[in-house]
Length: 376
Image (spheres, rainbow, N blue to C red):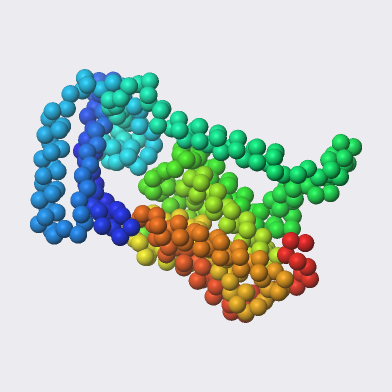
């Protein structure tokens, strides 16, 4: 059995008790450690503002209810058992297993009892699948109905001539390490490659728990204080899911496109790493009990530099309005989302933004005079 207490809520107003109970079902052979385990999880949430005496009373009552439920448990009432894949929940069950069998947790197969009809096991995801397909179809028809075809470009395409305004070619040149924005392209590739490495290492690309990121460099204060300082720079490239990777890359693409043209590739790399490391350290010290990821802090560092350069009017006047709009939309939207998200903190974003702003507002970054509009 393994017990866990976790505070949750935006202001940590809830206290969650969880018990993870496992019993062995099968062994490799007689005398070996068990291979297959039955897992049962019991949870209870209370107000984290209760007094110590009230909290102890709630915990004692919950402990008694867990004992009663476990004694009444009937292993023949399940419809089927579901194999639990790698997740934060599976890690907690493995802690329960290793408390008695230290060598069994790594290869343990955990089965969770389910009581619904086996045929309906995937029905919860069906509305999301239909909705996603519907959105894709809607976007397709919007493109077909409202986007005009350039007749001149169409004739060039039919004649086999290269297009004068080829978006795909522009994107390819932008993502090429020897293109107009080499360092932005390299940073994008590093983030993508490291995410692929994490997925090949067993990470669920559609969302994982914080503890699942620890083997790949998630920043966690208790581990850093034991000497794992490598987590600070590595965490800058740790993305938690495809969605997390997507909006971080959107920020990196737009921020890199706006900034690299003015300060150059080497200075962009320096800004990205310095502000990312500063943001990672600040967020880790602000919340020592959670796992932190570094890409948002580094990305916000780029926008902080842009804000500083705008304040000291180091960017050409014809590009300032566009950059102010990009700053307001990206930074404002991200901070708002983080503010309304439970258990989220803006410490990493704000510290990266402030560190970048200091780098930009002080005359330490010489600006290259391109003599052209930002997109020319």
